[in-house]
Length: 483
Image (cartoon, rainbow, N blue to C red):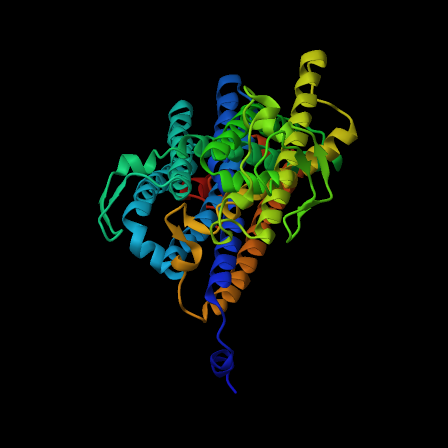
C-alpha cells in the first residue's frame, strides 16, 4: 500500500484541535525570531554608533557580524511569518470569510513595513565600506523603525481579536463597513503593542547577551566579548523596567475588559472580594481550587489598588460553561501566568543586580555565578514570552473574536488537517536545526578569524565575508603584475 493510500485510509478526526495545535506550534516557533528581528537592528546600531563615534574597532566588528546574523534570522522569520499568513486562510477559512475585511487591515500595513525593513537590511549590509560611515549608520535607522511598526501592526490584529472594533454589522451580522483606524487602534492595541515591543527588546537583548556570557565562561574575556555582552545585556535590563509597569497596566485592562480571562489568570471560581493571589495550584472539575500558595487579598488589591482588598473579582461561574475557558484551559492559563510573572520578576531582579553593580562599582558583576545566570537569561526570557502568549491566546477561549465568534465556528472542516500539522512540524524542525547550524558555522568562522595571526578580523571588513556570499574576488591584472 502506498503512503498516499495509507493517509487516505486513516480515520477522520476533529479538525479543530489539529488546527489549533498547528497554529500554536508555528506561532511559538515564529515568535522566537520576532525579538531578534525587532531588537537586533537596534543593538547593531548601538555598536555601529560607538564604532564611528569613538573609533572602536571591537564595536565595529560586532556591528558588522551582528548585521549578518540579523540577516539570517530575518530571512528565516520571513519564511515562518509567511507560513502563518497562509494558515489564516487554510486553517480558519470561516473566520477569514466573515471577519477578513477587518482583520486584514493591520496586516496590510505590516506588509509595507516588512518590505521596507527588507530593503534597508539589504542596503545596510551592502553598504559596509561602500558608504561613508555616518551615511551607512543612517541607513540602519529605518530597519529599527520598520521592525517596531511592523510588530505593532501584527499585534494590532491580535489586539483586535481581544477587543473587536472599527466595523459595522448589518441585520444579518455581516460586516458591511470597516473603519481602518478603529480596527488598528482598538482599545487593547496600545498596551498590547507596547508590551510586545518591550518584550522583543528584553528577549532579544538577553538572548544575544547569553551567547557572550557563555563565551566568557569558556575563557573568552577579551574586550570584544565584553562589549558584545554589555550592549545586549544593557538593552535588556533597560527595557525590562518599563515592561513591568506596562504588564501591570495590561493585567488591569484585562480585569476591566476581559473578566473571564482574568478569572482564569487568578484562578477565581466564584465572584468575591478579598481574592487571594494563588501561586501555582489548580482548579478542579467541581470548581474548587487545590494546592498552591494563596497570598490573602493580593489579587483584589492588584486589580484595583484604590479599593484594595474589597475589590470584587468576577468568578468563572458568572458565565455559562460554553462561554468561558474549560477547566483544562483555566489551569493552562494560570500556570502560564505564574511562569510569566515569576520568570519576569526574576529577570527584573537580575537587571537590578546588574544596575547596582554599575552604580556602586562602575563595572558589571564579575563573578562566575553572574555569568552563569546571564547565560541562562536568554532561554528564561524566551520561556517568559511564550508563557505570555499562552495567557493571551488560551485565556480568550472559547472565542476567536471576543464575544462575536467562537473558535469551533471559525476552523476549517477539513478532517485531514492533521496531515499538514505533521508536515509543518517536520519542516520547522529541519528549518530550526538548519538555522542553528548556519549561525554556529558563522560564529565558528568568526572565531577562526579572530585567532589568526594579527587578529585580522578586527582590522577591517572583507566584502566577501557574508553568509553564502560571493567568493573572494580574483586579483586584478595590476595586482598580479605587482606581485
